[in-house]
Length: 255
Image (cartoon, rainbow, N blue to C red; front, side):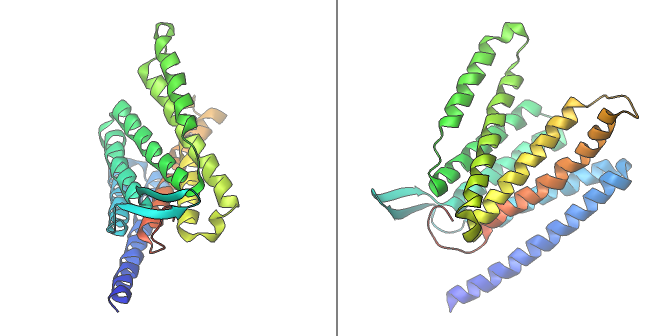
């Protein structure tokens, strides 16, 4: 009886969460496309949407932080996927505060590296994905730092680490989604969110590459489209990732 009441309140909270996110999403997209002069208000709605994602995930992570599950090799103790996701979304809040509101680009990028590391760990619990890609990424970053005399900055090195992380996570999520993920509700939302997250970052790259392009050129058109596409993909990605923690499900790592 108590569990049914708890699920009822959780369902109401999730519908409220999705309703608010839809309002925020449509409002800031309208501002970005039709009223660019309202960019300050658009940024406020975007940040509110990210903060709400964290709150939704935190509500779903109210259970045990550490869980045990039986595997072929014995009992495995690991952090719950809900806790990992809520922790990553808390870091995302701080990262977006740095990037969206304060323009602390390096700090924001480093926080997003930590976010991808947490998602990498969740994928490991879900699909057995190893963290070798981060070892390679950090090795590559160190090589870039060592070559700093050739114009390579720490910011560039951090970008290498981040790109390796988000790409590896998105590819792993897509592979898992094509297999078992379609049949596991939480994994479906999580992996789909990672793929949209990757598409967001692809538009971030296009935005930066084409910044300053001459008006009327193809590059300028790509710049304008990518500026809107970043958040077109980004907020839905975070909402889906938050849902993977907020929704009720089996209490085992990998859900």
